[in-house]
Each structure stands twice: as C-alpha cells, then as structure tokens.
Length: 451
Image 1 (cartoon, rainbow, N blue to C red):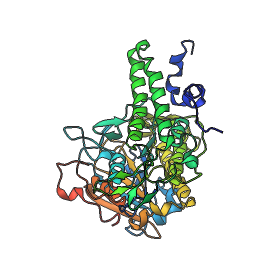
Image 2 (cartoon, helix red, strand yellow):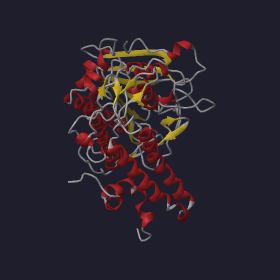
Image 3 (cartoon, helix red, strand yellow):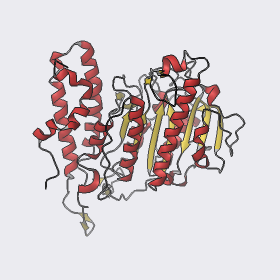
C-alpha cells in the first residue's frame, strides 16, 4: 500500500487547512552516524518567553549550590537537582525592549548579520558532520506576530504556530517509519547516493502550499497581504532548511573534507498529530511535544518553542486567573501582578513537563535546555537584568547540585550564556555570532554554567 499523497490528494487533506488556516476566509469570500565529534550535548531545546517581573522572580537567599525558590520559580522544584538559575546578565543594549533582536542573537540591529542561536548551532553541527533530516525546528509564537526572535542571514524567521502544521512539516508521512536505507560503503568509498523520498515529499508539499497562497496576493488589501507574508515566511524557512539536506541519505563532505553519512532517523519512529488547541500558549505547549518527538526520532538536534509574542498575547488559562493580555494587563496594569506570577508559574510547569518528557525518553542527560527571554525586566522594559534557566545533563557539560544552582552574574554579558549553550553542543568557532563590539571576554563561555 502506498504511503504518500498525490498532489490532488494533498490539496484535499486537512493538513493543508491547518497550514493555511490564518487565511482560509480568503479562499472563500463567503467566510546516521557522523565521523566528526559532536560535543558533549546531543540535543538543544530553547524555551523562549517574554520578560518578567524581576522582583518576583529572584530566588532570594540562594547560593551556587542551593536554590531557595521564589513563589514565581517554585514549580521548577521537581527538577532542581539538574537546573541552574542565572540572573543579573546584561544584554548590552541588544535586548531591552519590544522587538529587540538580542535575546537569541546576542546582537542588535545594524551592519552585523543577525543570526540566532538555533540557526548558528545547527549550522555548526553540519560543519561538524552532524547532518539530520531537519537542521532545526522553530515552533510556537503567535500567527499574526511580526517576527523578531529567530534570525538567519539578517532575516527574521517566523515560527510555526499551528501544532497540526508543525506535525506535518516535521514528520511528513509518518516520521522514521519509511526512512531511506543506510548508504553502505566498500573499500572506503561511498556507494551511490540514496535520496530519502520523505524529504522531497516535504518540499513538494511546501511548494504546493506556497503556490496556492501566492495566487491570492492580487486579490488582497495591504493589511491582508502583510499577514500573508508573515505566514509565507514560516513556510519559506522550512523550504530553506529542507534544501540544505541535499536529500538525506547521501554522503556529505564536512568542513574538514571528511565524507560523513547523514543521521538516519530512528526506524519505525513517528509522532501523533496533536491537533490545534484553543489558544496560542496552549498550542506552544503542544509544540513542545512535537519538538521532543523529533528528538526521539533523531529527525533534528535543535529545536525552539516560543511562548507568546514580544508585544503580548491573550491568555485564558484557568490556573492563571481572569483572561487578559500578557503585556498590557498582566505586566503593566495589574497591581499587584498576581496574574503575571501565576502565568510564570504555569510556564515553569511547562518547562518541567518538557524536562520530564525528555527524561522518560532517555534523552534528558544528552540535552541542554535553555529558558531565554526577549528582555530582562518587562515591567520597566530594560535589558540589563536578564535571567535564564539552564536544564538537562548536556552530556556532562553543565554543573549540577542536589539542591540546584543559582548564579548572580553581576552584570556579565548575556552573550556568554548563549555561547555556553552553543559550546555544550560542540561548537567552538563563534565567528559571526553575537555582538562584535564588546570585550573579548564576552565572547567566551560562562564558567559557572559548565565546561
């Protein structure tokens, strides 16, 4: 029995509806094993949110070998023996307001080409000979947002918000169940390349969807066109990443001239289509499962999930309180900021849930998790007091303590945290990443995290 769709079948499939869901009303006017060392950590998971209320977040009384959680961070308790809380990190003007790009790039707008940590690390893995079917996946966010978190070649990338769309883009026709056979070698020479048909099918699906949406452009007004372009950007980034793979299954020459084999997905491994939830934050929570399943199937080594949007997002979660906007009401209008505290506690729960899912899959000790933010203190819009949560065993790279670890960085550069995470993934050359106008010491890993 065939395990693929024809182009006509795909246009009738519900997945197309999910991918194009922000614009459905416009259609109807009536409504493998690498030879180069990979580094100690195997997987990197970025958990990304807005800034917070620093006064409520600070774990007062903590030390480098013991965390005394605040009310806001207390839900992190179940994984305290494998996490480090860091605060008082300075973005040096790169991440102190809405839409500032420095959260994951470590740099500001200007002449420098912006690239975010997820993209830089996936490029570095490829240079190291670690080549997966999907170099990286970025999920979550808000469909209508103007992207300002993830960057490649100075161009912002839009995460895939819909879990159904993300599932189809990542797992295609069912994950690793029909992976291309390994390429065998004889006498040290690679055999004829084998192209994994799933990669080409993913490309065909995205090409078809792009053409269908592009056909609408001449019928839209300026506002609708702008929304359409944002959605198309998320499709384009997937196309670009798939094009990097050259048909997974072929031998690839790494940067040192060594011929390596792409990583083969786990045989018989796939995910379950999760469907779409009732609101954006809940969709991001589901997208965490998609990212973790992609790790389990070894389809990618780098994943990021964004919760919310730099300008806020509507929140309607019973554990948080009365519905409202993350930025305008929870952060700036509420006094006291009880709903923001509850929202942060809910986010801590999502971080713990992801960690426990990785533990259940046997991947936590090989993964480095980083909870990063778009700015430091969201209440006053400043970037000189960033905070992070680092989790996972990272292959032994990260330091741990039975009672957790707390680091007051004393104004050190937040770029050093990003470089530490990249270093945990085996990246050694950070040329082209982060602000280049800072002292050389800011372009080194932070010893307090690991090494």
